[in-house]
Amino acid sequence: MLKTNSLRELLRKEIIGQDQAIDSVVRTVVVADLGICDPRRPLGTFLFLGPTGTGKSQIGRSLAKVLHGDESAVVSVNCTEFKNPHDVAKLVGAPPGYVGHEQAPFLTQEKLEKRLTIVLFEELEKADRALFDLLLQVLERGELTTGRGVDLSFRNCFVMMTSNVCAKEIDRLTSNEVMGFGPRLAVLQPENADQRIKAACKGAVENFFSPEFINRIDEIVTFNPLRYEDLTAILEKFLFETRVRVAMTGVNMIVSESAKKFLIEKGTNLRYGARPLRRAVREYLEFPLATLIAESDTANSIQTVQVETGEGQLRFYFAQTARGAMAV
Image (cartoon, rainbow, N blue to C red; front, side, top):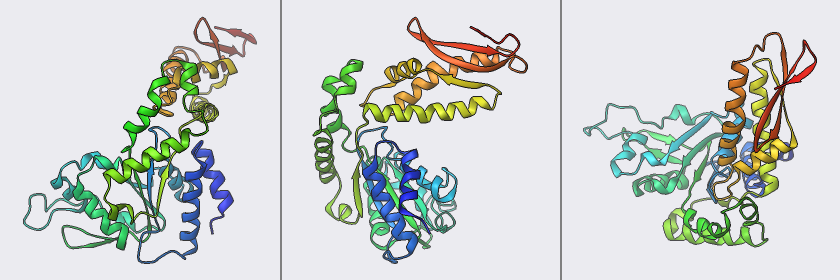
């Protein structure tokens, strides 16, 4: 039996700065795990909105990691592949006599039968309306009929949908002050920023999706814009992951506070969430570090690499066991 607090804490380690979204998911998962949710519908249905790069898709993958031990244990549907009405046949299969009938559909009962399965529809607004019609069946009855007449059951599933339908409104709210590092961090600091973004998202959703579609969703959750402290925590998570991979080469890595500040400065753009920060880690830390390790004799001499700053860039210093000294 899943415990509310332990599940919440596990997700908070994976998803930074989105406590409201995590609480919404945790409540639904705990109810589903107890078996007291409506047996005629999916275990829970969500529409995740908000700024890009804030964890809307990642929360589904992180939940799969917590529940099933594998982040890839998600049935992920990329809605950009369903821009035309006939593309929907890829999802459920074409009816007999139609082109593509012999091809197996993407959705099968084998993919959906595991208990507490997560089905993730990413960038929902980019799909044709024909996909929304199919989803109405899923959200209402927990079933979907394939082109071959087979009923697929979603009653063991959490259905999570992400959308950037309010991206233009969010960009308009944030674009006036994102030119420099300082203003870029300050633009979303006012206390009413979250409320303004939620209001913008609510209006965009009501304008884009039909009322019958909206009414069938259990929870519509707006993700918060990332704050400076969120980016700091996300950077620590990225660095931990990098440190683990570097350790597999036999090298320890120590990153100074000045180097962390450098990476945050290079990777901060709150209009795009955490993705620029991940790119900064790869560009300024991982790539040069990998080059240095590859060109060095790590078998006998190098134990630790220390990352510092100097002359406007990151500097890497290797501790060599033989001499007990630091060398560039």
